[in-house]
Length: 217
Image 1 (tube, rainbow, N blue to C red):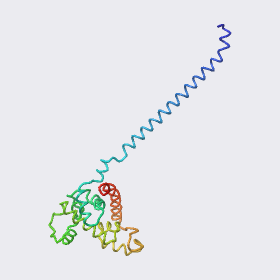
Image 2 (image 1 turned 45 degrees about the vertical axis):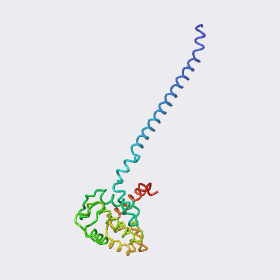
Image 3 (image 1 turned 60 degrees about the vertical axis):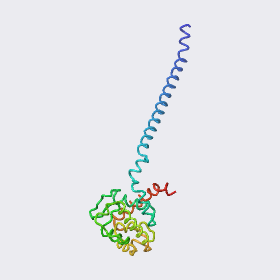
Image 4 (image 1 turned 135 degrees about the vertical axis):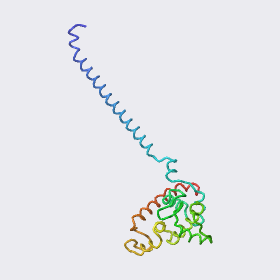
């Protein structure tokens, strides 16, 4: 090849080299972009796996202790067992030794006076300390819950509010048009503490409906 031929071919070779360089640059950009997309996707998957609820985590947050006892006592009082299960979680977090500042005791946090009244319905004498026994506590607590649900015509919000604030207080709220437009349901609960409690119990109730469903089916 002569010097003149080299000079004649140089522009073509130069253009070819430029095309090759550009193609390689584009390929590198695409490769980096694909890697970035994959990394972001893997990070997102990792975050989802960390945050996604796991069966064992659900059981820890929503305990299933005393399930057989709750089912039995709930059934005797015409209750969905998920309801007292939710009340127990809200009241004591499933701690049978729990005692409140108002001296409510045990799993369902019954006051001794209320428990003594319920014991009379079973022709039993109330014995001090009996509310720390899960069997007795759930027996009395489910009876009382069933009584409240029937008293408020199956309205769980009213029954739950009464369990927390007292049935007399709920009666007053139902008579107030500002809180109850129909005298049967509560459109508003004026007590922040009771309102928060009712919402918490009903939220727990929805979850326990799922957890208790398999055996019920």
